[in-house]
Picture 1 (tube, rainbow, N blue to C red):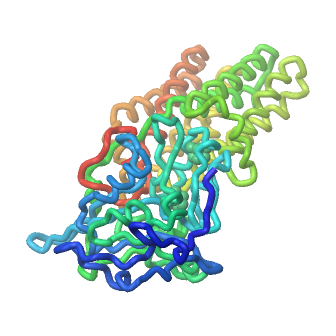
Picture 2 (picture 1 turned 180 degrees about the horizontal axis):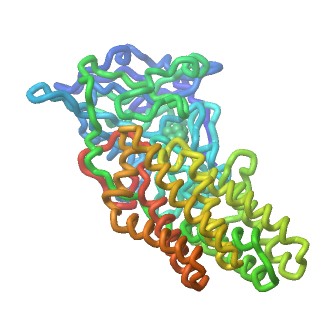
Picture 3 (picture 1 turned 180 degrees about the vertical axis):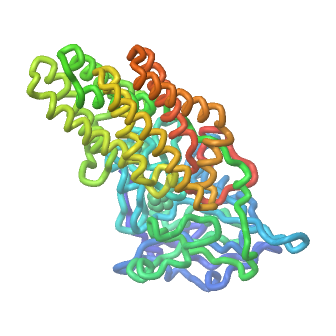
Length: 487
Ligand code: SF4
Ligand code: SF4
């Protein structure tokens, strides 16, 4: 647990760097941003209704990455894990081109989406405003990495959990500024205090070109923009569109649990009830492989009040239990099917987050439900229902493309581009298999053949669901880290 120690600079006399201390001259790049050089030690301690935040001057930043290095060194981060990143924003027409840098870390938001969605309550908004992450409570599900619209939380492979910036709590406790603030040679990064109520009412200064809107989580980082930012800009990382991780255990969980619920909802005999129960349990067992710390998976039940991931785990576990009990007790098959449907709904809802625009639609609920309707009824012999489910799944996918294509920003159109251009073959095969499955179902072909065709169609579709997504993020640099890293 992170312990908050009140910072009282008046009692700290011999520290090398003071919070809010007046910057010293640093040569040619010492242009100190407006309004920052005059801040003195009176910046702290906090008064009622205030919290700490970062300030950043885009004019002062020279893109040297010292803040990234200092952060990594301070927090012992392995290569590939970054809590602070320096992105590039470019614009203008030759010879009047401009390039600016944006150094960002956690924004210690007023409404942190990471905290809201975490199934284990591993996040805590501390009294000083810092959004702290408690490593001992993290199970490494990575849901917070999807929820944060700035892609701040990072899965740290060596610890098998997510980690992120805590505004250097240990340094704050000693009256020291965060490592990034101290390392910046131009004083582009500052630590400030902010009146929470006033910021909640007006947080326009948290917005910058190519940053997700501060409205989503009410980011507290105050950004000073240069006066000469061109009207048309782009993020240097825009060129580097690439697929996301496939999350195979989640492909397995969602597909197999939906298959099971489809069987439970149309079940017609004890053999089929056994199959539904076996599928339900296999789905949950496979999902454990997704967790960085599966041994403490039980902690996922902790946030039923706010997290759709907690609700998914609870409802699909309930479904598995009822499906097993329905094998000897036929009367329980309907309660089992109802719990399974609720579980599918929770499964779909957890993907409906602003941080992932291609998932952020009711069409995700339709697509997940359609998978259950497409697969289960084949096993139970309901051909027309299965054909309808397969058709709905394909139509919902196409409708999602149409929705995304209306927005030109990369997290929207980039997802369509990935699915239709990067993965042209997979998408074409998926649709061909789906159409063939519908034809064989309606033509009375062997059900085993239809099951293979539709199952392969759904498998490719679910894999595409995970890889053809572009997260909201802060602007990135021209180069990008290895696949699997979050920058
Ligand atoms: S920036 Fe992201 S990780 Fe940080 S508090 Fe906001 S939502 Fe959470
Ligand atoms: S339990 Fe999951 S959502 Fe919570 S902090 Fe860990 S990885 Fe993030």
